[in-house]
Every structure is written in structure tokens, then in C-alpha cells.
Length: 291
Image (cartoon, rainbow, N blue to C red; front, side):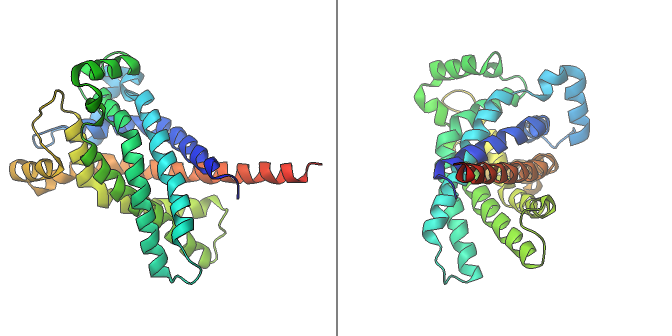
């Protein structure tokens, strides 16, 4: 086991690698969630339209903000999760207790990650939205414009919505992956095999999307608002207003795009992370063998 900070760096780096691949899908998911009328554009049609009218730049809109978001968010979630879990778990814990403690560790690490990465999520959402003035130009220019318009508090707009989303996602994602992976290993699969990591991460991705989708939609709509006052006051207001004006199914607007992004993203993060971990173990073993 290496220094604790290594897990932070490995997890953040894995997230950035995955983000570069799935960012076009995230762009489309964001735009679908910002539709306030029944969706008139399906995921595939919308993605093709963005590619045709905006090119590669449109498909990778907000990539810098997305990369910073994922590095800070995932580094904190995975890093603090490992630290918390090592202190919470005891040798005599049964499977149910381990799962509950792991969920608590995931929720706590998610709360820390939400506070740290909220500014980048806000900037990413505005970059990826259509027709948002602050999304023009560079990331630094967008951050400066946000600060000038709304002050330091502007960077933490929508934090309750984002925190709810990240806490739910972290509690489900990190604990589910551990449980599913352990279950697969107990059934004879090798822990270091890519197929084991892939199977565990696919199950995890589906569980996370199902749990966090309404919060993800609320978060996207909250953060796309500009100015000190917007259409929605808080997470509950988004959920209630959406159900009242658009129907309950609207809470799952963009769910296909969300899973199309998060499913592969979840797989890629864990696949990259497991490879980085293996590389780290190999490097440390080589260092120990060196005279």
C-alpha cells in the first residue's frame, strides 16, 4: 500500500482520461436536460446535429472545465473514501455492515468532493448549454465573468443540488463497486482481470444513474441559471416544478444520454484506475528490489 495521496492522483487522472472520451455524450445530456418542454430531440439525433452544426469543438464543449471538475471531484471522492473506509471498517463486520459503512464513507467523501468541485461543475454546465453568454471564450474568461457578475458566492451557486447529486452518486458508486467486485472474486473471477473490473463497473453505472438521475436534472437546471435570481429556488423547487409542469417522467429527461455517458464513463474510470493502481504497485515493487 502506497502513500494515501497516490490514490487521489490515480483516481483524478483516471477520471480525466475517461472524461476526454465521454465528454461529447455529456454535452448532449446537458442540452436534453435543459429542455423545459417535452423532449423533441432524441439523444442520437441531437448528437448528430451538434456534430454537423458545431463540429468537434461543439462535441468537446466545456472539456477544460469538465476535466478540472472530474479530477477534483473523483480525486476527493475516491481518496477520502479509502481513508474513511480504512477507519470505519472492523475485522468482525458482516457483509451488510461493510456495505452500510462503505455507503457512509462514500457519502461523506462525496460531500467534500462537491464543495471542492462545485465551481468547475457550474462552469462546465454553462459551457455545454446552448446560448449561454458566459460560456463564450476561455475557461479563465468565463470564471472572471462569473466573478464580476455574481462575486465569490457565484462559484457556489447550486451547491445544495450538486451536493445531493454527488453524495447519492458516491454512496452508491463506491460501495456498489466494492461489493460487486468482491462478489465476482468470490465466484472465482480473478481480482486483477479487466473482465472483472468491467463487469463490476457496468453494474455500478446502472445503479448510480438510477439513483441520481432526478438530482442530476435538478442540478443541471439550477446551475444553468444566470444572475442572482433564477427560475428555481432550490433542489426541491426544481423537482416539484418539473413534476407539476412537465410530469413525473420529466425527472428522467436525458436518462438515456446520462447512462450513455455515465455507463461507459464509470467503466473507463475504474478500468483506468485499476491499471494505474497496478502500475503503482509494480513501480513500488521495483523500487523495493533496487539496491
